[in-house]
Amino acid sequence: MNLDWIILAEGFGTASNGAVTAIGVNQQVIITPSLPITTKRGVLAHFVDSNGTVAGGRELEVTLTVTDPSGKTLLTQTAPVRTNADRPWPELPSGVDVVLEIPLRLSEYGSYEISLSLKPPSGEPIRGHVPFYVKEAPPVPPSS
Image (tube, rainbow, N blue to C red; front, side, top):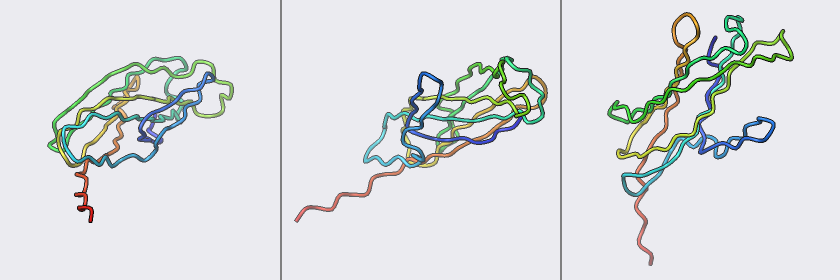
């Protein structure tokens, strides 16, 4: 199993057929005139089982961690994800999509990191990360 991609967004919408729509893609820079700030970020990750090592319908564990510019952990969340048991095209690799929305209270300017780790039934966890940045808003020039 491997991590195919990660998308950082402001949030996600899910249709009744399971289709996911990303809202505010590439929102990696948060501009704020003061701290702390409360915000929300969404993470969509796609893991692919190209070797066929994970049986369909198997429950796996994914862990999300957010660290601040000092390396301190702000949030850790572990949740189960399940591979698709019904594979209409068995010749294609199976996959697992992880969709998470997380509220954050950020109290430092700098570089933050969201890390994902998926634990397969055997072997080492598969890891990936995506950075985002909190920057101070530039001063507003005085009006003339």
